[in-house]
Image (cartoon, rainbow, N blue to C red):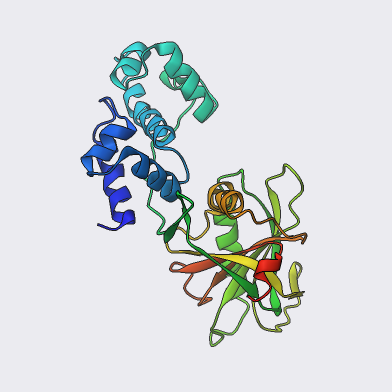
Length: 289
């Protein structure tokens, strides 16, 4: 099995054993791996620790149990290995922002979510730590024409907003236009989750409508990450893959308004392999790249 298949099977195993004691050691043993390697692998692929993931899935499972009005919160907490109702309630409020009792009374409704899809991340081992595979390269100077808008990565609707604007652009261009397209994230303020976004193609197209722009993107030295899976989990990339890359490689972010560039090979097929370019400072040792 490759590392993606291991994690996919691990997620299914965890889902079927949420009412039992689960540890890094017990899950790793199921796949004949050392707990240390499995823990690093799981964190690299899922962008969270195994314990954090198990906690979130137990809370997700509790949503179905709470709908059964005959079951007390104490029973649910005990069945899902929270130990006490108080610890269950604290964890529930941290994840969902409301107390589980509000679901009991019908004041609030929260629907369970399915097992997450594993994003296919090629990985490599650097100094004993597992990180997403990357290369250091130049993002070539390019003129990008497209539609500009703003997203807040802290809000769940940002993916739908990007898709809606991409469809809006596609509706205004000739169907014969093929080739790559880009989602450019820029101008994020410190401690903010709001980004200006441009969805565009490398062509000089003119669309006489508000929010359509043509910009010249300069050549930028970047770390390029390769992905295949959910195309718009940019928040997870920035919190995990990019942050881990900076820590381990000892690179620094470049001083530019552009935060990330997401590149797709085909403007009409944004559901396959793609690249993310993250601007970084060029070190003296990188001068030959």
